[in-house]
Length: 151
Image (cartoon, rainbow, N blue to C red; front, side, top):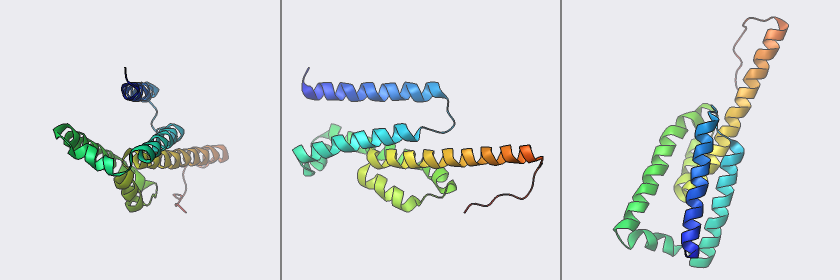
């Protein structure tokens, strides 16, 4: 096996492991730490690749043959589908979606994973705050009260 084949197989193994973790965990909100780690790891690998190969080869690689174009289209469709699912949740927690979308369009998975990390962090913070507020309402005997507004 060549070094590039080993890198490709390692990438598949990492994604398979993460997919099993995600499916098995059944968490309502994803892990911000996992998304951030994957974003940082892939950004590091991408920077090393650009340093060694140059940025022009990204385009050359996707326009050399039909498989290159197919992989390019697959990347574009995957990023578009991910944004389709993520944007409503990002809007709900107050993220600046146009800037995040520009980051995703510019960097694909790197930006998408970073956006997910931020989204998951904000969702976890909101869930923790709601849980704390519910606990303090229950402890004080309040059955309801005015809705809390977001600052």
